[in-house]
Length: 312
Image (cartoon, rainbow, N blue to C red; front, top):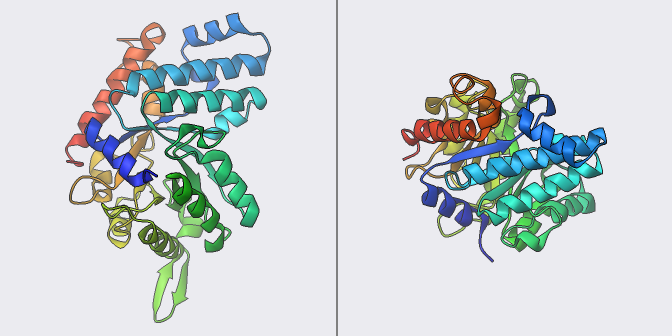
């Protein structure tokens, strides 16, 4: 069975970049031609939105597949549309897998026992795109219920050559409300996110490939560069998923601490800045709605170039 971290790093080497494109469709921000086409194909509101999301994301996949190793569809935007949206998500994931991309489904699942296992078996296809109904290579996971709730996800990931990314130090402004709480751990005080990082490192070390990375990753935000560098050092076996670059304010220099000495060990996500590049400067005037895919291409190339200085 092909190991997740091995496949991911092979894709990073092949494309020469750790850039990860998030797929976060928002109906009110979609290019007008995509919305018009969806309305020509179907009529009910939810069906129109789902059709538009599917076309929009598939066309982004087609643009970025030659340039980046992976994409990250955000499940919530599809789930909001009910069954039609869930079908669209499944089709987008399979389209991306067929294009040769690693797919990290951002659904932040987490539960106990058999429920956690059911989530894992539903999403984690791993090396075989037909290995699960959703078909994803990897899944984001919440650790809030405790370390034992991560084990079912790890077991399925090992079985299928899949990966998981555990929320450790997230990029949102309120992350510290819980993650920065201090508690006594023997003689040394420790923060909650550091405790989670320690558990994740143990699980990753158990599942490491021949390059030293496990199938258990961590989500650590670019908006906290000091903590990013800290956890990179504390979690040498853990592949990182780094959100917060681009629209949330993170820069290339902010993510530099997430990489190992070979420029591996992390993928850096950008969603809105690429998805909706056609509506923002410097691309809006040049491309606009009718040439929105060209804007996606230009924004992706810009990200790849920006990261090249810190991930090589």
